[in-house]
Image (tube, rainbow, N blue to C red):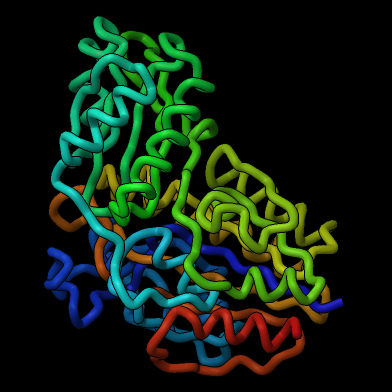
Amino acid sequence: MKRAVVIVVDSMGIGAMPDAAEFGDDLSVNTICNIAKSTGGLNVPNFEKLGLGNIKDITGVNKVDNPLASYGILKEKSKGKDTTTGHWEIMGLALDNPFRTYEKFDSEIINEFISKTQCKGILGNYPASGTKIIEDLNKEHQKTKFPIIYTSADSVFQIALDIDLIPVETLYDWCKIARKILDDNNCGVSRVIARPYRVVNNKPERIGSLRHDYSVEPPKDTLLDILVKNNKKVLGIGKIYDIFCGRGITEKVLTKGNTDGLNKTLDAIKNSNCDLIFTNLVDTDMLYGHRRDVIGYKKAIEEIDSFIPKFTDSMKNDDILIITADHGCDPTFKGTDHTRETVPYLMYSKTSKPENIGVKDTFSYIADVVKSHLM
C-alpha cells in the first residue's frame, strides 16, 4: 500500500514572491532565512540532511552533497497569502480571484449579526492582532458580554469570547451564523474563526485547542475530493478538516498545538492505513509569526526538525513524506500579518532518487506528486 504524508509548516515561507509589494510586503521578506540570520542560525541537522540548506543560504544550515530528499522552491499561483488559499493550491486548486479583505465590516453585516445572534452589540470591528485586541477589549467584554470581532490583512471574520463568561458552544453557534450571513451577502470572506479565551491571573489567554475555523467551501474539487472519489482514505490532522470544510477528508484528528500535531502525525505514520496523511502545524504562524516572536519561531522549527528521523524511520518503503508551507509570516518584518512568499519543498522517500526540482510555478506541484504516487 502506497501512502503519502504531507506536512504543512504553517507560514514557513522562504523568500518574497516577485509581486510581494502588491500585498503590502517587499522583497526583503523571507521567513526562514530572516529568522536564521537574526538568531545566529538554526540548529536543524535533520532538515539539513534532507537538503533544506541546498534550497537557499540559511544561517546555520549547510548545503550537503548528497541530500536525502528532493528539494526546491514553489511559487504561489493564486493571488493571496492566506492559509486557505495556500492549502487549496497545495491540493491542486489555484484561485483566479483572491478572497476579499476588510478594514471593517459594513454596518449592515454587523447589524444582521447582532440581530440573528441576539448578542445585543459587538466590540472591535477593525484589523488587529488577536492577542492585542483581546487584551484591549477584555474589560469592556466582561461588562457588556458583547463579542469581540476583528479582522486582519487576511480574509477573516474572527470572534473572540471569554468562555467562562459565555459558553464555547454559543461562540460556535455565532460563528456559524456569521458564516451564513457572509455567504448570503457575497462578502467573499475566506474564514470565520472562533477565538475562545479565558482570563488567567487577570490576563486573557486564548485557548488554541478550542479554536475552530469555518471556511468557505472550495469552489471546485481538490485532490482530496478526487482521492476519496477513487476510494482512497484521507486523514486530516490539525485544522485541515476546517480548511477544506470536511471535503475530501475521511478521518480527522484535532490537535492542541505543534507538539501534539507532530506526535499524532508520527502515530499515523506508524499505524494509519489512510492513503494520504495531511497535517497542518499551526503554532509557527499563530503563536510566533503573527506575534513576531522570532525566538519562539526558531524553537518551533527546531522541534519539527527533531521529529524528522522519527518520521523517516517509521515510514514504509512505498511511503513519501513532503514538508512544505502555505505562505510566509516573517516575524522580522513590520506589522503582524502574513507575508507573500514562496515556500520550500522537501520530498523524502526510502526508494526514490533525490533531485533538485528547481523553482516550480505553483504549489499544486505537490498535488501532482501525490496524485502520481497514489493513483
